[in-house]
Image (cartoon, rainbow, N blue to C red; front, side, top):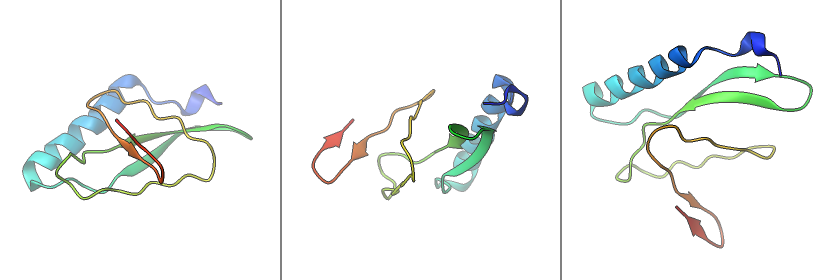
Length: 86
């Protein structure tokens, strides 16, 4: 992966703060969005900000390849055809 494409942790935190401010202002979660961080011939990394909560409609997320999610604030649950993980 290319380190030149990686934003600083302060810009990631700023993106989260903007999303939370919008949530407070609008009173509703916004649709998840992704911002590319780094890419190469194999792996890639995206920053995804989610503000959905337990009372919001479930959001279906599908990936073409294996995906690793790192939650830095809050938590999430994963529902599959056979099981539910929290």
